[in-house]
Image (cartoon, rainbow, N blue to C red):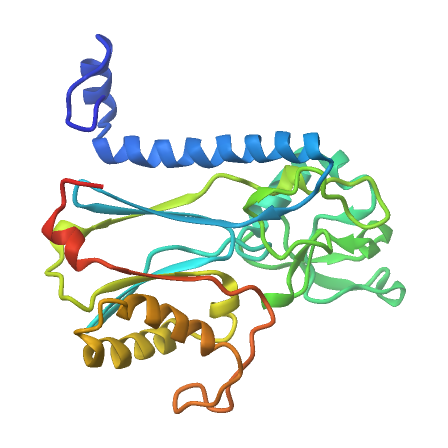
Length: 298
């Protein structure tokens, strides 16, 4: 099906009607396929060059009156309006995807090479815990239950730590991203790539249904920003800066620069002592007002 609604092969009309497929679904599918293909290209290029590495990815596409935000990793996008803050993405970390990761280890236990336990415990178990009853969670559980500790439970956990300190196989802080095809657990031959998805979650914002104002923006940034500023703090900075700089043609660029500077430990009335981000910080500020006025173009 073409985005205009025109079918591009004879079998489409009946199939599209039966499945309820819309143009929006094609854009989502295109983004998902693009992430997957990009990951494959990165893998081939890294192998050819003998290099290693990976990254998260956050993409926004404006098309036919809708904004599509695709995220794989721990970057984040939010919509900031005068009276609204709307998350446009979710972070993918070992904690948020615990059940998917544990399920994979359950189906393919050889991925852990006998070095890790897939079970989650409230704390790292020690030899003294053998035979004792402890709380645990497995891939099929949202809640917690009890079990007696055996030797296999003393292995290093598949997911360890909490919050920003949570790590997958003691190595990665994210559970989705691009690249890292050759990444292995330190001093082992255990690969992390099987647990690392390149498929994004796609959120759709119907821009045509919003009564857009000139200061309505989407803020996209890597985790270096969100490690020290909350959604509410970023929105406060946006609302404080834009109204007083209406005539500046570079105001959105300057706002992005200001957000970056706010992660460098400078004191202000909002963040108090001024926290410092030691991670990479990339920020985009995208005005939506012009998108609403011209919803037919990309």
